[in-house]
Every structure is written in structure tokens, then in C-alpha cells.
Image (cartoon, rainbow, N blue to C red; front, side, top):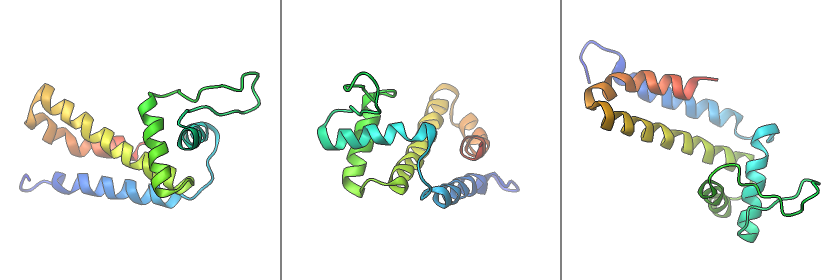
Length: 131
């Protein structure tokens, strides 16, 4: 913590605000680009394969638009907590927080702890609260 600075609480406030905003919208129906990924995860949870059918010519259409581990982790999450809009969005929220921690760890390795600690409050605010 730096004395005389508001940076020490900017990070927790940004994370808390992100969690609140994510929670408010978590129950809303899935739509457009956030629908395919959970559907592939549901198929993976049932069959072990990320195959789903939307009426295309190929019935073996793969839902692997992202690395396979991501769909498989979401499938395991849904098996544990149930499949629904809220569960899928909470998984996404946790993944966003984890991605932020990884990005800051990379920043720390590349530029050192001073640069990381100076940029972290700005990073969290821009990364999590950018529409």
C-alpha cells in the first residue's frame, strides 16, 4: 500500500463492482454468441464429446471454437453445479478473474513487481469494467 494514494482500494472495488454487475445479469437468457459454447459444454457433459446439432448438413458438427480444455472445464462445472444461465455466467466470471491474475503474473515476470503494482489498479478497472 502506498500512503496518500487511493490505489490500494481501486483493485478490490473494481473486482467487487465486476462481480455485482455480473451477478445482476447472470440469470438472463443466453443469446447470440454466448449460446453456442454452453450448448457444446452440455453435450460434452452428457457424452464426453463437444458435438451438437443446429440443423446443419453435418450432424457431427464440433463445438470446439475454443481450446478443448475450456469446453471440458465448463462441462465439469455444469456437472457439478447444474446447467443454467447463472451457472454458465458464474463460470465465465471466474475465468475472467483468473485470466486477469495470469495477465498480471506475466506482467510481473516481464517487467518486475514495481510495474505490476503500479499498473494493477488501472488494469483491473479497464479489464473488468470495459463494456
